[in-house]
Image 1 (cartoon, rainbow, N blue to C red):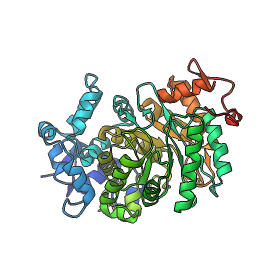
Image 2 (tube, one colour):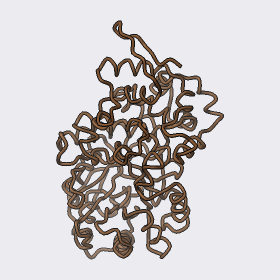
Image 3 (tube, helix red, strand yellow):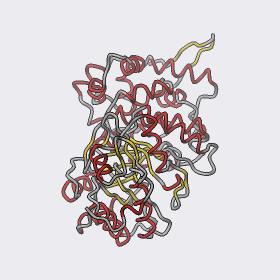
Image 4 (cartoon, rainbow, N blue to C red):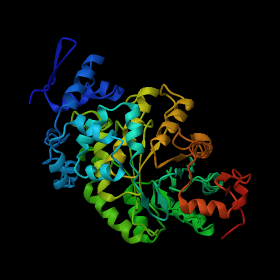
Length: 457
């Protein structure tokens, strides 16, 4: 197949799908580092034109890693609904875009079609969409999941309470949890990134967070974001685990660098369904981010957007309660500045929703990136307009353990107010019972962590 077009009197020809996909991507420092970016704006436009006219079946026939050598490819390909794929395989990428943006096409129709798509198709259509396209199309898709409460419903915005501490101090973590709860943060999960990944430390944090949840009858779940093998040991020993977490990558080689495999994730999923304390049925939590495969030299020569799409194809296997892209955490080597971080956040959120998973975003950046807190707030507002399921709630937006900037407790409250959104319905009722929320508005008790001292339900 000739991958060729003429633009402004100049012929552009791309030798294969891999190179075409890289050239069609919006500018990313990671792709530039890997030698995959378009050299000029005209070349990028030409690549988008060629890609828009490519039939979907071609992308299925050209996965980023061969089926025979990569288990992530096998998961993605084997999950395709062949009946739906047969209906759409002759569509071009451009026709898929028009379908997604059609005012007459709603959530149910999009989610049905998603079962016939591979991650490479989802990546391709993302490349030819504008930022507003990504917001509009994503806003049409609702992915609702339930663990101990319900996430993703129309008119809601949830949040992960992230009370990290540089020494895993139970007193420091407890104080942050109480403050976050007092602002209505924590309905997606109370999730701690541990400084100490050992079984003893992780199990103590699980016990402590579960005690808070039970003592105050909070309709949420806990999670300690240790390596999945540590959490599996906690499950088997009887520790109270709400969600099982793992960072994942879009290739088998990338996952091996994380010390995981599909088989291990399958085992963790079965343990979660058997031993996690919430009612479920959704128990898994994954984190991703553009550039992870490239940083592990596990990208098979493909662009970072396509490898990110494959993360979501893998995550879908486990019907996760939530997935989030830690969009700016990997640093300027992969997303250099505000413009690139914004684009990646909108891309990732859209791709996750189109894949059919419950998608959130850690709107964040490292201190050596060319961006700032105002820019993060702009992205958070764009993603809220796009229907993002959840954000992070970090004390003062400054993570004292991971040393990066994210979104604060105050940001979650402000976003809900600006867009007239509510917490998860079960959590909203709990907030009202504690006098934190009344008639959809925070009361003067909001921000006062002392309301939890000495009180139990």
